Image 1 (spheres, rainbow, N blue to C red):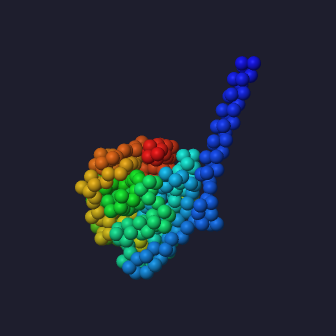
Image 2: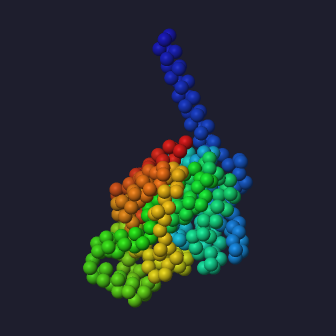
Image 3: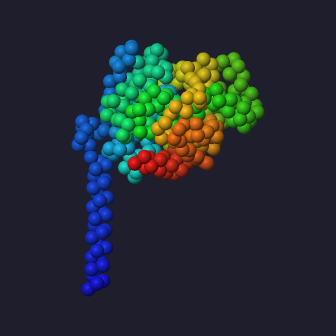
Length: 339
């Protein structure tokens, strides 16, 4: 009789656990509280600017009242498509997250107006997106990758009172420092004749020459942007690169990921001295083979008031792909700590 009672108790526990799992899963996929239920989580948000009103595209996945992550893609001018790897990890952690194509990118409007291509405009755009999505300090987490990390830092410095946490992925706090690292550390790792050709094009400011771009894409990107054979790059990455708004990218970043050159908008950006003003929980992510110094990204975690560092030993600039398990397990651990 006693053994039967024990077996019955075990069965009841298993049923309760299964019921709890089903309930949690059901809650995570419940869109009843949102009009975006009719559009698969998609919401188009009007953005007011000094030069007109334009629409940006967002898409919600999941439901978690305490953890809502807004994904800020890189570029500037890339798309949120390359964040699709998150679909393989975030639902397991019950993370509510939002794809978001910034103005001029992807599915969002492209006014093709250079007056909008500046940091301040993008910061105010993010604030309008936050309001439209009803995100606040009890749940709002920004995950900014590359240029999105710059945008995340800038947003936090102005609006951290609206945030729960910040994640800066694969981005340093100083563009001049990024340029120095690219030219003095990573550049010399390329074959000498290749580097000579690249530098010759840069001296003549022939940044859009097809051969210049081909040399960088062949010798630099597979080592420091995504450490895979370019013919095997994941489809979300291929689409994001193919859909890049190159005029926007060229104006703000320059012609490639090999530093920032010419008169690009971001060339002198440096917020290192201001990181001490960020008090919300902050995770910085760096990778061994990144286009930027992983030690500088680790240092950022010490300069903010409440920082942590995630190191991806096999990763490059797209560490969410070439060191995927380390990247997403670290991000999920950080998000879980916020609850």
